[in-house]
Length: 379
Image (cartoon, rainbow, N blue to C red):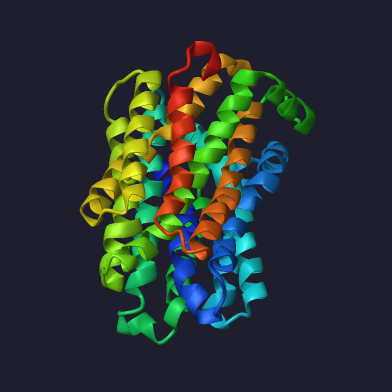
């Protein structure tokens, strides 16, 4: 592998840390004695940043460069992780740190995908990008499991729910150092994308439907990350087993699905349909509330969720490749679904409808399955 690829892979690894905010919400809820909806604001503040800063991040990259945008994102994340590492913040301060993490991760997402092309050998871009998505999944899985694991590890147990932040801080710092030392010749767009031109694409149904699809997909994924552990807790699993067979198994299955997609040749539309169907089956299993179906539901859900983003992204870009930069900004902006959709599910949980709450990701994946069955001009 080209040695220049490694720092970018490390940046993708730490992107996955944002996904740990969902599983962390349970510990934060207990520590601050707040409602489920209030605790779900952790993931809300991460993902609302995507809505606000994705397109501006793309514009900034055209001015300061993709590497510098990566460094800016990592720098913001370092600050966000340093505060709860060294002090026990009030809840408002914690949410501010999480929002800063969301901004930094947005910049990593905006810069990470295109800069991989700059560091890849000829003909290796798609393969390296698939690998990077798998690495991001590993980061999500490991970070989610670490949230539960720190409570029983003597080295971190004394810090309680804050024990994960020193680990995250070290990883962010290492990524910053490796990216900072990277020498790279960046490709630049002939015409920098603009906010107005990007938003005007939503007037075309093909793109509006796809952006809604990404919004619902990310929302459903964050719902799984946020509520799988409490769901398994409710079935009588111990805390560490609930973390292992809940968010960790989910993100592990998601990672396996992405690595499989990166190693085989398959039509994007066919894979999109297969992914949407598997994801729908997985969340329906969770909706039944039957214990024996929970773990199969987690696995099928992870495999189905794995490749919705890359397949829908690729299909959408194929519709108008000359507007790829602007479409990319819109698709990243739609990641804000991770802020809104889990709040709806959290409200259902707070009203005592824990099992029924999985109706929310079921509806999301019902939409994605219908979208996947559309013809070329609507997906």
